[in-house]
Image: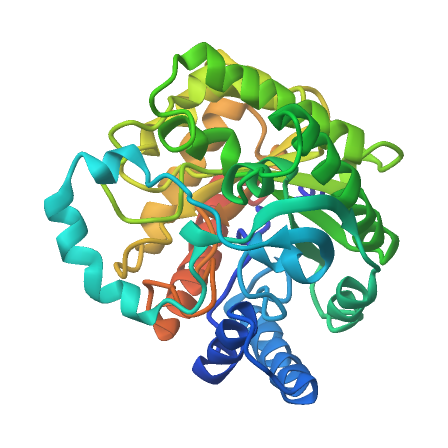
Length: 383
């Protein structure tokens, strides 16, 4: 995982704005409508080229394809794996249920939704990876991208199992293991292409107030242990420094009053055999949790991609604010070479759903770069 050197690198957590026409194509495909594969391919290629160029212009060091090839950060697996069909009955986040008047405010936003993440396909048969044609094509689009390093996201077995309801396996444990075995094919394909693998695992925090909302904390922590173990099994043979793990509490504006504290899950996250954690720390509910890294020091060899840009508000962070956030994180971690500047989550986690205006996304990423440069100047004084 890059870091080190004499400056703070910049990255982000994955998804970037998709053109409206591309989002609509993904939506149609997700609903089972007929989509011309050549039209979709051309739209993906053009959008990927544009989003790579925009990242470079914004000063991103460790960039990606913006997930332009995918309908969402996890339901894309329906197109690459067997066993999924119908629709899940995903429980709504408990903090939103506690505030129905807030839900009334966000109803208009749902009209932009192309992919319904709350009714994703369910597991109705044996889950297995079909072939690597789609992931190979996706990786090929960023071959030679002008980043210091290029990453590619992939769903964790936990978010697939939590959000794509189990109607086939005798137990959730067997379902998680089956998904992990399938995702291993994708993980290996990404790494074999020379790309940095980012595993998106919001389930390791989000499910506390979703799937496990009515249950004791210990049940949720057992889930975290189960998923981390499954991730480690899927990564067998892949060097830890080729992988980073993204964990968040759900990329949505909302109360977040029931989010599990980072202190509760961080020791378990450290068991993942990865080179870096990508953690939300910019939003108002978790901005104080940089102190967790004082109480629970990063394991040797692990870096931290600190979320210092909020992905749920159109406020553009001032570079001085970004720099101050980074300096606090560095102070807690103890070494600036182990900190990378990032975002809390993606900006368009399912096609068309992004709450941040595309022009504002790029302003935010430019502020990320400027803030990282300010922090670098303070943390590595000129000699």
